[in-house]
Image (cartoon, rainbow, N blue to C red; front, top):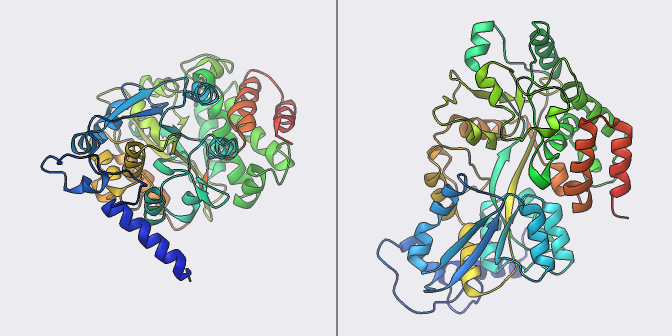
Length: 446
């Protein structure tokens, strides 16, 4: 049972979130009257003429739904949000922070990096209004990703399911293929397609300074499936070495697909082309019949060309990346987290809004084409219209599902967003599994 003092503190936090009367956490009213239709925004107060910088890796055209999702917030509070999207975010955000020019708010996909920034004293502890929303709308596991030494430093934004394989339902129907239910069936399907002379898979790990990250997903999928969630957790937290036997088996299993010249790289080149192909473009050969399968997360839905029918009977759809057998259902996923580097009232107000159910539902409205979901329990899932979003929710809600957050995103930055990416790229282009894992193990902070 929760102690009474903590209940009282949480109650006070919620009251602050609702009233903002003298709490000094989500911001204070700077004067003025809100426009009509702003009932859901009264708690944030008026901050006319104030500006908040918001730095992310999201760039055009994917940035439009995000920008539209807080238009009402801007109109009602008087705050101008300066959205700054950059492809080289992962590198540049750290340069800006170390250089003393951090954004007010930044969006991170790596819990490990968030914890590193906290440890260096760069991140600002979240206001009690954000903490109240976090406790109200997210599970304990999600809360843990932004809690360091008992203190909260942010809140999640979106979520995604990574355990997807994209395919063409029309092609499957025409050729008599069936969706595989186990890893053995996935391998058998790949062999069947390769026997026709076609390359069953297409893949790409290019992503600017972040090139190599799709390799980490492949390895993590295999780690979960071959060794189970406990072994996965031990590996992610370095309770077992990065180059353990389980990890070696996982990367070798990924290599049976990514480094198999009979399997890749349909429509794009040979095995080495996997490293030079941008991940955004990697699945597109399916539409031309040049490959049949592409492993990538739910967020990949937004990369299909406009007019593509993404549905169970359409041009493109996805199936769950199968488990070892039908008794388990490991699910790899990820998300983003908002962390502040300033504590001005207007920054607290916007940070609190982004952690609310109001924003989550505004974001659903602003993303009519789909490709976005949240683990925010205040999000109305019945409003989801995109088939992939619905499939994501179905997978996450399956009683057999065992969810694990992307491993590389939880590891120290020197490993998860550096050595793992770089050595994974070297591995695709010819480096051995043993040399790859040994190099990453050496990079782990001592």
